[in-house]
Length: 423
View: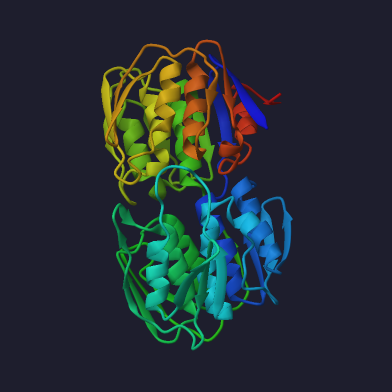
């Protein structure tokens, strides 16, 4: 296993390209199951989650070729059973369920694994697919879905306890593209990644309207065709590097971003006293570290609100921001495992019932810390950039799930980081 050593104190300067979105790539890769023709998907980030999805598609019988960010998938002949050994490693593998069911009339998928950040049930996915006419059974840790008479359009409400389900919306939307009749998804997730999937499916010949809003309408078609598609930029990676630039930067420039997708993250960075400037096209931004910094109040919410996936990184930024900040996570109230590790570095954070109260300290100091999940590990890297001394971050495989070559990008900006093998 690898660990990252971050030597604090370096100033970040220069520019980097933001990768394609991990969270958009995963369902789009799965969506290629819906046709037997070639699909070419560009800007797929080289992260372990996309690698697992490609392995799952290969195990199902797809012909997959990958070269430097471009993936070509042909699902001419595929199996309807996704292997447990691969599915257990990644929660997002559940999104092969909808397209397999639509294409084959049957899908066998293991109950998935992934981040340990609280209960992330698949019941909303199943409720949606049942409404389309699927029969759901559980056997030996597997979910078995069958639709002997095909799928039929339906009105489905996907409202969950903590807001809409992104992957659930993806699954039902993909299944509904080949269902007979019209499907209406109420309380749909409105995230940009859902809209990107809908754009991919529409290019294949699907008839989807309303993606990016809370109400999506899908008119079923007989078949879908192959297509070429470029994945949107990763707004969470962009937000993470925005926070890094605010912490330790001097006019850091991020290329291949999407201003529209970054509004809530940009607003939070600006509220804490930093400056973010976008070019006219909205695809390049420059972050200027502020002089008069202050604490902020943040509440996570479904898009277009502040994303839970940027909660940990903002906590790291606010740990050394003067004043008191209050961060409430309404999506995953248990998602504060990074706080204990930040406290080991000298942060003053109290967590209670899904809320963190952060009192900004002048300086953090290096300590050996352990990543507990994907975004928590990013927060520890950010904190280490300005900490006194050298911080060792172990369990780096968490960060490799969702950040493409994060150590190389930090090195390009002038950070002093090294990836080493754990003994």
